[in-house]
Length: 211
Image (cartoon, rainbow, N blue to C red):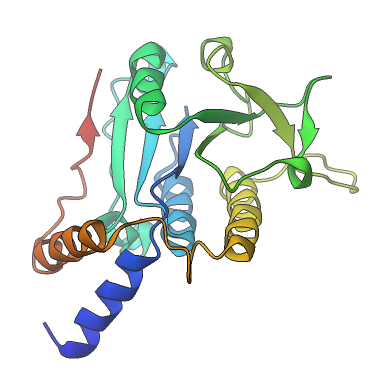
């Protein structure tokens, strides 16, 4: 590994956001998931959760190749679940609040949310949205303001818009600079993990399967 690559790894490890993640429910298009992975990596997210509650999707093999994720798959962990309760149990062990993209009378605007704290952002697919099973685990709903004729966004675009609002808020708090969220010991451990992954080939079919 070159010194330049090592410097890059240290900078990335120092700016990771351990209290921010994304949950995707029934988003089966690997290109959409790959785009979400790229956005997550770019704002410092180290893991996401992919939940399939639609029985028709459970038999599908989730393939996230380097091509579909532009290499982000190697640096962002993907946890795969088919049971909502098990998925959110794991999420709640690491993140304090869950905000879902669901338009109802209780939904608040994206720019009204405080995304600087410990939070998981829950997205459904653009056709059917989120299931009731997933919504039961959310603390609240939010919507991205839109003024056009078509009141919907592609899932990867909606996720990117939301994550960069989180980035803006966290940047203003100094979480990427002087107030980094990981300790020196945690940064060093993550750097070592990046070193390990540097020469490791990631199997495109390799997704951490849970319940």
